[in-house]
Length: 214
Image 1 (tube, rainbow, N blue to C red):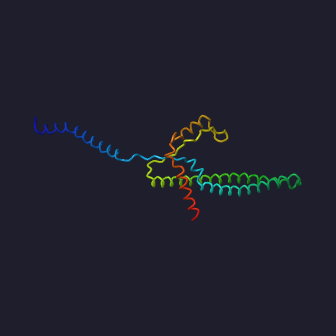
Image 2: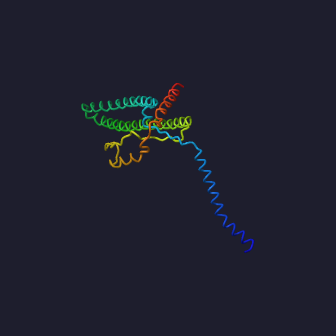
Image 3: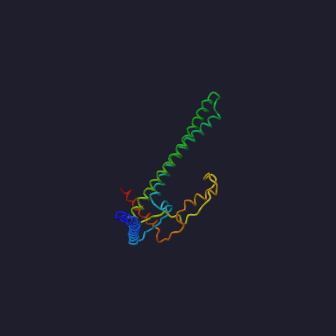
């Protein structure tokens, strides 16, 4: 066997062995790094409780109610004008009835459009309120996690009961209602020792009081 062939044979035999050794060293280094890393710190919180307990949402609900009272007053005034026209129609002369009917129809169309506009405005304000609150919850969680060296923060559904909605609440079969809610379940048990809901609420309330004071 020539010298060149011996070298080639040695190379072909040695390559798998060297590869195995390299992989082994790589695995050991990764395993060593994992073993030396401290345990992952996992905590949970209830987003429903946070939403219910933060003072900012209570304040925003008061503002939203004030807006609702204002638009309700305007709606009542417009409804009153329509009722007045209907009453005037009963005793109106024949030559005036057509004009009153036209005005009445116009006011009814305007009232219907106004009602649709109000519902859209209220719904939009609620959506923006919840979106802003959700963003603040995320910011607060990041702040708390960084300060306490939490590695993972999970939303917990423990304590939340499945419910069957009324037909007018959602257009979905009762079976699909339950299946959808089950699909949203993320954690079925969490110890109180790792629950940071109160911590989040306290931090958000402090931040909100500071924001209101500025």
